[in-house]
Image 1 (cartoon, rainbow, N blue to C red):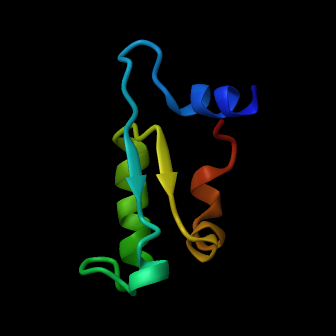
Image 2 (image 1 turned 90 degrees about the horizontal axis):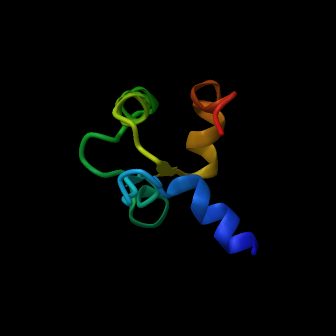
Image 3 (image 1 turned 90 degrees about the vertical axis):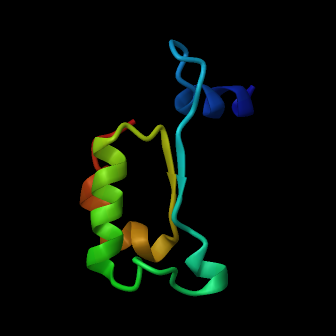
Length: 74
């Protein structure tokens, strides 16, 4: 039941698709080109949110630094 509930939050029932952005790779592999600074990561996050991403995977540190972008969203 809980898995179904969580998936329903990121699965678009109308289009039957999900757009998921993974920005957490730097946690394991170091910063990728274009993501060397907090400002650049923020720019990518803003673009992803404005573009309608259904889910974004980021590191805890990136979340803390950009928490204001996610407040009030479901």
